[in-house]
Length: 507
Image (cartoon, rainbow, N blue to C red; front, side, top):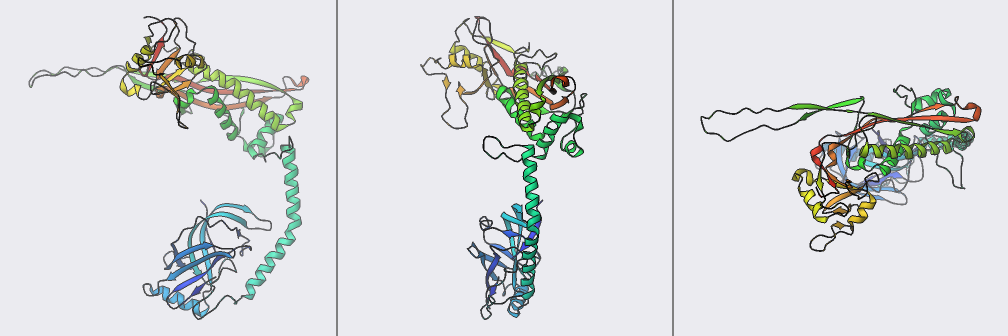
């Protein structure tokens, strides 16, 4: 949580009207902080006026807050007739004992400054206090009714400002050297290509690049930047941000993830309880004997499956860490993505996830024709499902079949396929969304080219996102490093009744 900070010129009259500069632009405060113009644009009046940042000592309210070229200009009222403490504060201001303003805020966006302190470009302004010694020497009461404070100065504060300026000058050579070292290190880790300045790599990406080159010989600092996997290979997980990019690539190959029920697990398998029937309630008379109902419960166990491969990269390429990282990410994303997508559709459930197209409990509806999709069959198949499942389902088919459906019309000569005319809304068939799966079969005799279902009943289990194991020895004589990658994922149908397939047949 951001810490609450206090920074802040001030005027007051007998009625309690007060104004000042709560923060001057263009110079640092006593700790070296500079707040840029524009940082207060989200500040909205009214704000509480406190005495010395004491939340139990509210003495007035600030009615106007405005950024000017000079600084943050504020106007408000000391509640001198309503709050006794406010009258005391007004007297202290006139006597010169409280001449400053100080702001209470939480920093939203800042950057370190040379010589110490920060440059703050965005903040949340919480309150403005009347104080004896402001955090910023220039944040002071500007005027009172019979007391002009704009010309008053504090020699000690001026001396402090001079010392801060001198310290900043002394540290400039050190800062320049440090900046130069950082630039050299950045170039060594991520060389610039194509004439454009490359983005500074994160510590995790640097560590992953080192691991690809050196394997287990990486430094302790790089080792800490990566998570050690607990899988039998004992490899290292890729950086979190890289894993995220790979998962995003997987969705391009496997849109099932966008509609299925996805769960992350920490165990190899999960057991789900099932119920095969309902009770058998019957109508009866007042004294009639009640009949018994039996319910059968069962279990469905889903086990994660292991998907693995390896890629080989020349040691010359490995010397360029960013290029190696890109090659590894692309190779794994392509291979794992295609295999996973096929598994969710056609997996045998033994070494692969259980594909919904091979689940024996999912029923089908006969198209009525062996080679031509019938619009009436689609309508009847849709409405043959219970309303609760029908109203949550989506159509799944490949692009070739989708092209066929785009030409079909209903009995009123209207296309059953409807394009999306609103951004973010999916295309529909008979009012329901469509997902395109490249692994679905084409229209052919006895094929099942179309599936409709509520995909919340298809569960995907993610056990291990991605782990890698670098082997620089097996093909060292050829100047090649082998990188093994493993992913563990499971999938299966939880409720077959939520799905139905269209069969290209008359019965």
